[in-house]
View 1 (cartoon, rainbow, N blue to C red):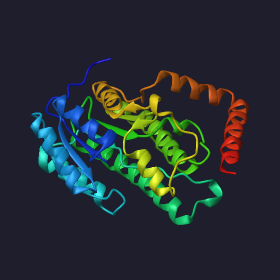
View 2 (tube, rainbow, N blue to C red):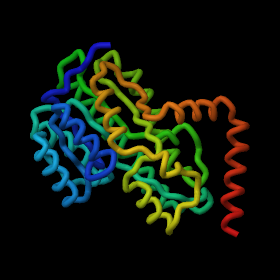
View 3 (cartoon, helix red, strand yellow):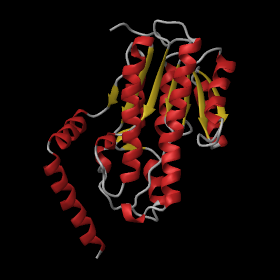
View 4 (cartoon, helix red, strand yellow):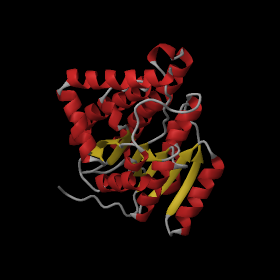
Length: 278
């Protein structure tokens, strides 16, 4: 497989003020890429850009809300105007909320699907179309979406989150097949539990302490592991699923292969959780 040079190419990253997005921005800059960091929190973005520039990288920031109309197109236009072209996009903005299915409100579901899936899909569509229209081949660009390992399983307490990540996974795979021959790579990233603000945000949105199935702290990975895997994939001439844990990938393959056993294990775990509340 031919290697793709990253030096001087540009990438736009949403959700880039912290966590996986920030780690990926730093890793891409270290690989010689021009980076546009996009997120809502201006001060954190400014700190992140200064950090990258201090390391000798090229970075700019764009304060934006991915769910607002026109913002994804503004990100593409800003990146092209700033660095002359757009080679890659990492759709990373997203969050989770812990709720039993019967307790989700319409507004909660609307917000999480709009943030995690609909805005992500729009950015993937717009950026891929931009790459096809503006970038020379044979590799015209790379579209990446941050899915999750739970995209492969309906997780109790996290049905909405896992569903949005499954949708990213499904659309990403379809786009990967549809666009490969046209020179646009499409990849989905499937992290396991990562040491970021994600879990604090989940707890805050879920009314306090988390109780559902989750990775033990000792098994969580640093965001830099995911970032390294993303840069490694950017150097490839084809898109793919990006995994950072072989044991988790095997376990989830087994969960798909043996759905009855998976259901039994999930039921057992849920009963244990429910008993602990009483």
